Length: 285
Figure 1 (cartoon, rainbow, N blue to C red):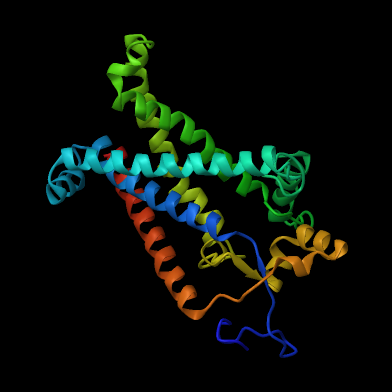
Figure 2 (figure 1 turned 90 degrees about the vertical axis):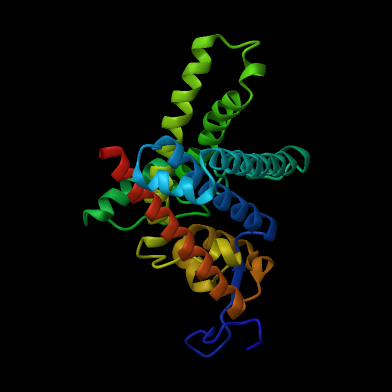
């Protein structure tokens, strides 16, 4: 076992456990920027949305008033926008410039296909004990749903947010009623995004039995052979049949990275659930 392998990283026969690369370093950094800025936007946007709540007023007092909250909200919006634009650049580079196969269609694409529809109903039958559990490919249907929910949210929430930020500019080609509408759209879509990410996404990604209590792959970039074969069965089998598994072999995550990832991940989940509770409390009170 090398010093890069965590303790106990061996198979049943005593051989070192193999790890396979799932996300590149750039993709992991992109996700870090995404969830950090989203948490920042939620933590600053919700107090403005529910400004009459006691916790919103206390938070505003702690950071120097609602003006400071608005400044931080705009800062996190810029960070998230940059991350989104870099992601679009990566997709364009891979799919259009490099003509990489499978970016826009196929088993490894984030674009939904007919198999995802069958997997949804197959999963429901499995939940009810009426059939076998579906075998998933590189991305399961709920991961694609999460991705496109964020993609859609970036366009709608982002445009409406910048329309409010730079209202004099947008007033040159938008009628007054549209500028009033973007306030409602931004507020309600952002609230929906917060509720979705802090409940559905967190549960699907980290709290389901296959990953509980934390799916580490987005932090480490690699997953063990056992995880790969169990969670991404079709992708594993396809790569094995083509003799391409060895091309994906990575290095076992060091212990410090695993511990750091757990601290970051659990902190994000805690903040998310806390904001979710405060939001629901303010919304129904």
